[in-house]
Length: 472
Image 1 (cartoon, rainbow, N blue to C red):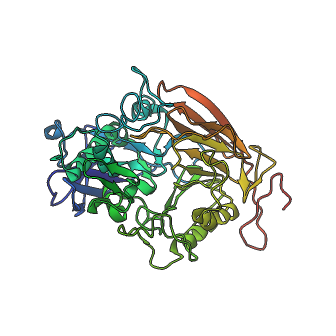
Image 2 (cartoon, one colour; image 1 turned 180 degrees about the horizontal axis):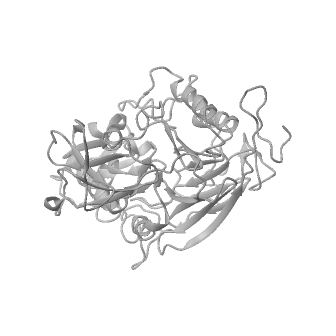
Image 3 (cartoon, rainbow, N blue to C red; image 1 turned 90 degrees about the horizontal axis):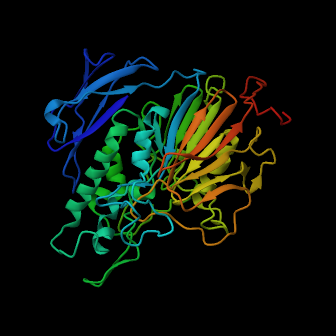
């Protein structure tokens, strides 16, 4: 388990005290990872705890905390991952595109300026962070499929007047404040629930395109960015995902096992391989990647990772990739985007069960399919992966809106008017349920169960093909 936290001062030796009893933190781990970056007000500290027992509750404290209670060194707790092959049922939280909630982010109603009026939170209703906190006992860890925090929106919010008309207000310091607010809001959850993040475009490209500062008569593009926001700097400094353990690369592509499930995280922004250019990889003044040591590193890693999955121990495989290739926000299609070209066939050949996306600020579920062909078995032992868009967690701009009543072929569910997050429950080796949770009151709106027989045959010593209802 890696424990990460921010401090206003550099830590000479960031340290975590931990143990299996809150009254006896008799073990410690330290590192030399305490770093900052241009425009940041804080230092980011990371300590990896090794040799932990699987499926075990640990208590811990960190050195040099921020906040009013810093002198008291609060004690938190976490539970380690289940060992691979553990067949006990478990649930995770899953969502994407989650940003700061009020004061400088999403208000109690909707984005204060330019937000979607068709999706609101009324007085007394809760936002996604509050809902996830209220239901924290119902899931074991959180998977965040890109667009984490939206600190890059500082310029956009300033131009739109959220902070008043004082031109002396500096964008860099406000960006820092927004980032700190977001982490403070998430801490009641993420100090005790592992937070697994994937990269999205807002981790790098400063999406200010088309925003005009009428006072200065300047129209900004997404090439305008603070140094700390370019090239995924903020994202790389604040998080440390298990790429070393899975032979991946930084926070960009990595995998891990938990119980019956093998989880894979990818980036759709860069490193697509085979001459394909990532959607923000070629920004004019904002260099973003590539991050691999050679052009095909991510796609080669993905093939090798999926080929090495022990489907006897972890029959379920779930992949996270921020950008979708199906959405009813663009029902005419996305014209086979580069990230679909890069990954869809590999995920299909690797027998992935669920591919979850964000980026589009809606909730959408699509019948299992591959290359535009629907799997006629639906949710009953399909060969193709189930596809989920889970980008309605909420941020400053509110939600996207479907342009018409037209729906993409294979749409099982589409909602553009409700802030939501999801829970994935792996009941056993053959049944997985996705529950859609309404942020406003933590009720379950809908749920679907995917059945997969996960039967494999070994032929000639090679990894088997799918059987079940298919002919092998």
